[in-house]
Length: 114
Image (cartoon, rainbow, N blue to C red):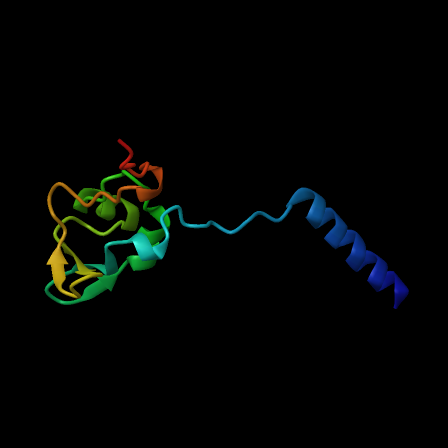
């Protein structure tokens, strides 16, 4: 039985050397800063949820447009892209110019010193 343990340890040693662990993809924009709860493509026959895919891609100051959503998800352009607004909980269509999430942490607070 000891030779099985030796083989097992050798295999995992090689695996650790060749394929080191990497950190999981951490989203750049925290979920609390996203302007939506849900993102999806609506068709006449069905609705496709792509929230997780979009949330992983979103970056600050990058416009999220319908065209970009189609490219990310490989869903054709005849779908209507919609999202549920995080503040009003209303279902809205993606605007043609897209949605841009600005980074509030980079802005410096204005001081009132005179």
